[in-house]
Length: 241
Image (cartoon, rainbow, N blue to C red):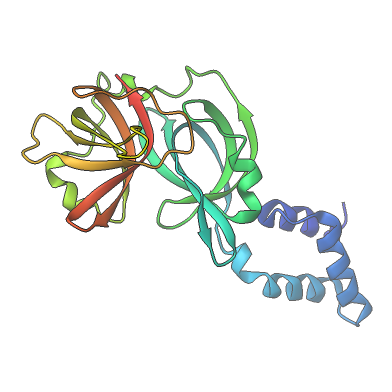
């Protein structure tokens, strides 16, 4: 494999751009008088932002959150919540999807387990997901199994401290909230054993939600935002115990 071919292979892997497009741009620079290394470096400079995301990593994940799509300046985008299990270490991670990567998001179903490749940013968010393969559901624990594994769920008594972050919570429904128009459950008041004032969670899940009743024991993956009266949870994944 020639130097150019090696570089094109690597750059396509990192940026997810088609090899033919990268090669054509580099070859155009060579025609303009650039040497091969100079033409490659010119391309890298032009795409510096896309190349600065680190290295692709292998992940084994269970999808625990699939939020509703949002509308941005450059089209729709969305977020998902992943539970990772590697070497006995259990973590939750946020995955981001731009408008161009939404087709890959649709391959991932809430509750299922996948092997995939992705880039992990400095803040722990993962993106540029590829090589998605559904695998045995026993590979990553179910959220219901985390209690026996002593997973540290975020205590809901500190709910106001979590604004701007996404976490997995465990607790019980004190009261369901229904739409006045449709009668559909759109939210619930929720707390754990140490909760004094239940937190309010609104359902923003882009997947089927289980039937929720007063007293239901739930595992909820949610982004914590600010409402008119304080912190609120935006639930993108809801699982019954």
